[in-house]
Amino acid sequence: MSSLPEFFRFALEQKSQFKVSTVTEQLNEGQILVELTHSADAAARCFRCGLALRGDRGKHRLRLEGLPIMGFRLYVVLWRRKGHCDACRKARSESIEFVSPESPHLMRDYAEWIGRLFEIASVSRVAELLGQDESTMWRLDFNRLSRMLFEYKIPKVTRISVDEVYAYKKARNGENRDQRFFTVITDLDTRRVLWVADGRTEGALSEFFKIIGQAACRRIEVIAADQHDDYARAIRRYCPRATLVWDRFHVMKNFEEVLNEERKRIHAKFQKHNPKHELTRGRYRFIFLKKESRRTEQERTHINEATRNNKSLLRLELIKERMLSFFDQPDEYQARLAFHDVGAWIIQGRFPYLKRWWHSMNENWAQLANYFKHRVTSALSEGVNNVIKTLKRRAYGYKNMEYFKLKIMQVCGFLNARYLLSLKSHTYT
Image (cartoon, rainbow, N blue to C red; front, side, top):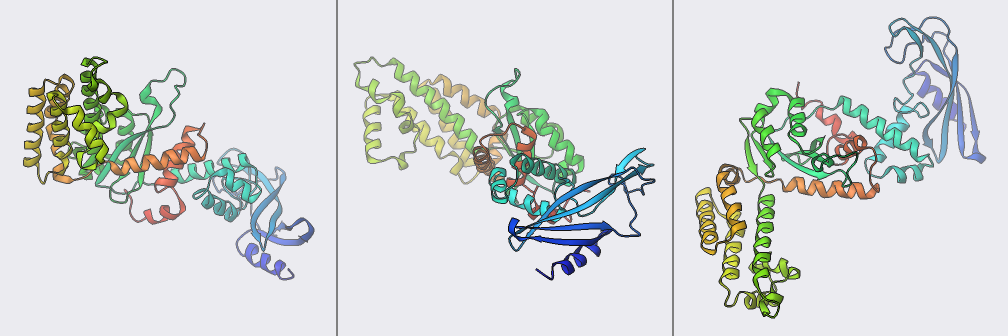
């Protein structure tokens, strides 16, 4: 420990307006205490604007914690001067470069190291590991992320995916359902989240387009999204040159929901004593939605029994199998033929729910057919949504929605130490 005074003199005196006066090694308490004094020629500058301070407005004592050394907690004690700032027109504290901008009780390098821990662990676990107060660690993480967001520049993109995820499910202050979502925009090439906006409305996606600007919007070539009308309106308004591709996952999910409605309609026609009534109950709905090649032998037997001597269920099975092969077609022409087959069988079987669904898809065939030109989906966004749900469970929920959005961009995006530096040469200007 005898070399510690020399170490601190080199580290602090070379980079600041202070000199090391004493170093106390409190080994029994597991800490090292370093006291600093101002250099004789050290000028006080405003911590806000950097202008030189005039006069003497007093001083206050600071006790900063720094990076641990050899298992000992490090504390630096100094007096922070105050003076009048002509630019701010008020009394200000002096600027000290090694004080963390997020917390006046931590040194900058220590706060940055803690911030990197937040990127891989929850706030509560970091606080427990370091023996710090949990609320203090939360404020440090929130302030750090807010500062990084201020410096953040959205990277250049040409292909993006748009999807929504529940921020919270219980309504607050009479909010509607769309306000309880986040809109998450993801880069399909880097597979990272670019932006998170409040709500599932046209304004949420428009916010992203306004931030990146008109020139950047013109560079976007492909946007994968679900069939939400608000998203489509925002895309038409800000990115008229971009190709909107309906996501195959959402299309098939909607198809399966309508298919299940038809199963329930057919099931309601059977009398309770009819064997078909038991075979088409709701607990078997997943068998009817499952692809034939993925069914077990027992499930195949069940379907054969249910469709025997029942044309409606048999046609429903044929429609389902043909539609499940729709996105596997090699080109748009073959996909169109498959879609026409599905439509013809729906009309022959007189399925009212499926008929409405098919006409809706047919009217918007361009968005459906764009998949065969670009072969992109928002499946990446679905994977990101699972990470977001895991993040929410790990924290046992978030009360502060701004902090939740920042954590999403930290864990799934570029708002972290690893990626932020790499973006400086690859951003919009």
